[in-house]
Image 1 (cartoon, rainbow, N blue to C red):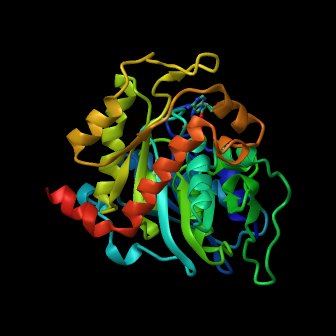
Image 2: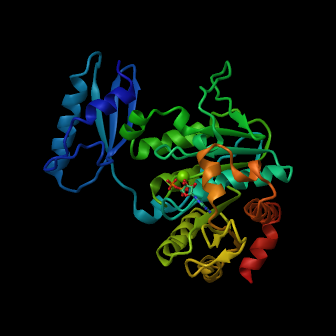
Image 3: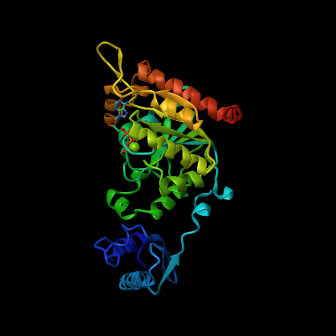
Length: 358
Ligand SMILES: Nc1ncnc2c1ncn2[C@@H]1O[C@H](COP(=O)(O)OP(=O)(O)OP(=O)(O)O)[C@@H](O)[C@H]1O
Ligand SMILES: [Mg+2]
């Protein structure tokens, strides 16, 4: 019997009726179940047109049935639930991870704002304050944490086939990228990745941690929402840059956490100003301070701002993050202050809620 992955690869050859794109990249494959009795492909109804749905079902059936050792094929169409119900988090879906005291997620409304850089250095700064920290790169498509902390070696499993996290700079970490090669990552687009990711988290032997930091994929779509729904999060951090265009996304990030009832620990403004290496002075490049203003408009804490410094990028590229490499650097000190605020927020949620109520 073929694996779900092989079936997905086969379905990639099926075109969406009337389009040159295939049905997999359309994101309509919700799930593939391979059982003794046969294969079940679950599709989301991307259209209300019955003839299109019929054609897709027939094509999927034909494609899967043509694969060797497939005794039967069933195709099920899942109707999208009404949108409000779809977005609201069912409380029982929130799960704890045994041994892990708190889980926080680092998100951004858009890509490239330095979310992974912040996640790594924040994790290290929390570690420097004595917390036992785990870090998970939940971004299958942009696996940056592995590069930033410099671990490429193969991952080992316990006899129960649980994943043993890698350790560097005193933090434990795991990246989806270590398990998903780039080709698979491209095929596994859409809801299946999300499902995989959420499950993945629970299959890691984290041991005892004070906090697990999740570096979410950029954006605030379904993938992010699913993870924030499945795991019991102590809070979310939103990273932004000072440009107006990025700041609009802060709202989206904050709203994403609010939708699933996850407290927003605060907003971090990255690449806020330029810190000159030579003169040590700060130069305002963008009209900085927008992050603080937006945070206050949205009623969430502002955690701090981080300058643009070359060492921060170099640290990322050379697998030597600045907080570990140079704890006395002004940026490392800024991370330390942010970490202290994050820790305080996690430890005193009641104070935060009281402040939010005004
Ligand atoms: N404050 C900073 N100063 C200088 N360079 C920075 C700073 N923050 C991030 N960078 C650099 O900007 C680039 C993007 O950062 P990073 O990969 O952390 O962003 P991201 O939001 O995680 O991106 P993606 O959306 O691709 O996941 C990297 O090369 C990083 O080293
Ligand atoms: Mg990233």
